[in-house]
Length: 132
Image (cartoon, rainbow, N blue to C red; front, side, top):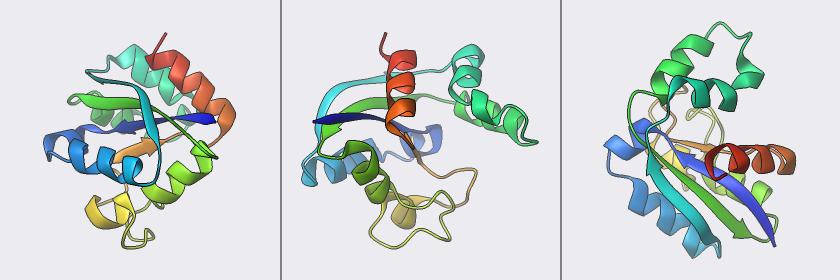
């Protein structure tokens, strides 16, 4: 079984969506092997998004992800990275189909409810950042 990292962002936490989001993953056969509600500091946020450091929106992204608590999870399941991303939906909610988390709950690309690792390597790195 493969593991992946998923994080409900501050907008999802403040809107009370943690339970609904967790249920979607459990209904698809994922097991939650670790989870925590936490407040990110700037250092952790910058480490998490280091691959976007040169982007013009980097500062706003760090400000957003540190604006409130997040719910970080390690999920385990078959083809966890790919299957979790299918449940999450496209990064831009206008491209996300109904029935995906972003398609159903996200309002815009900046406030898109949830993060999911995009590769096995990034899942390992992100799990290490949050659950060391």
